[in-house]
Image 1 (cartoon, helix red, strand yellow):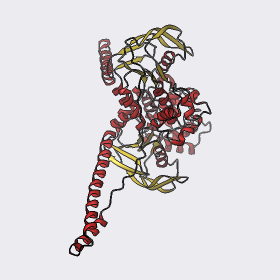
Image 2 (cartoon, one colour):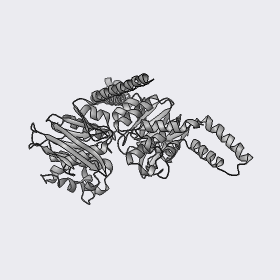
Image 3 (spheres, rainbow, N blue to C red):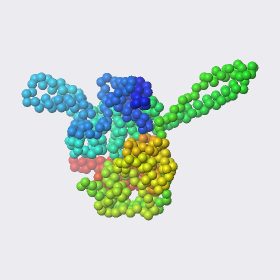
Image 4 (spheres, one colour):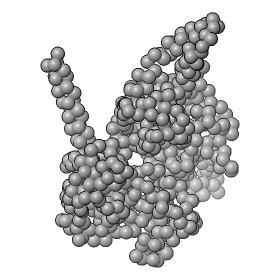
Length: 546
């Protein structure tokens, strides 16, 4: 068990937490939620001991081991992949290295033998002989190939490092597991594997995530950070949402009834306080009035942007034709003879592990890159807006937010442009902030404002939910569901994909295309059935060979 005892944290004059008391018990998976800036990641740092609170303390059941997802992706660059994972249980790793050093000594003494014996006993008690196998299974489940098990961490790509660090956190069955945005940079297959792992994990899990489907799948409790407090709700994210909305409605209704009663009592007192025969009743009602206390309803820190993509013209029947597109990047053929035709009702989600290929295809369709072979043709009635995965260059400027957005608007009227910024929660003085200093979430909201102001009837979005909070993801999800044009997008949020897409495309590791007119859940179910048939066929073949 881990508990926060009277935790207060102040950053300057601002209080992130005030007198927080909460216990996290064994066998539960807690989803920590709250608006951007509410302190979710900060709270996990307090629990893990990486950050000292202003007051209060954290206690852990003696003898229990805590593990957390490392956020420094370069911390283990000098180590091999397997070693990095096994370091998730630092004591086990230290024992194995001390053993190696002892056995490598040329003058192995009796004292060394005694020490080695002690280490061997502790090593066996910690299931050390299974450590490499366990680490390899975690890596394989997250999609790290066997060829990388002994590679240096410094040679891995960003997403691969994230998977190894996640495996490190999961390694060795920790008693308390803290995960801050574990699904970031994971492909959908890896997320599905992690969901199953956490569902079957028997100890304490505390996880911060913006993925609603993930929270619904794995969480048994929700810890909601709002008003500098943390409130626990039994159940998953959807249950929290319904419960919190019900609680707010009940408070408002109770206040409404109290306000009506207050009005009634005040009217009686006003009418009869000077009437001798009614004076006792008036005095009684004054006492009753004094006892009525309205429930304090604080404004939530959660804010929902208003995302509404309105095409300036209706799209025709001919949208996009892609013929034989091939592309090689850094010596690797990522696209191989890609063919497809888009219709006016298509909302296409690109899924699968070959994310670099999808990004390259989107860059080609947006006119950023040229294909090596093949061609594409947009319909004459189409207009496109593109959300790139890497938008660093977009904000390498000293322009203010308002100036930045104005350059993309045909209507240069300040009030018109600021209207779009206001919808995306940039109010008042926010408009004069320099785009160079914006946070990741603010930059994404700027890009979405740019797409809205364009009036395009085809939207191409490459992982638009990265850096967004739950409220913004929900608003974007709803905006795209209502969008009457054509969509091409990729996203790691299961619920986002399932509720938005009516067509699924996957670019295989070989660069070829699988194209299905189906929902995402139907696609996954068919893919799972195919895997089962493949495994069954393999077992049949093995039986025949024997």
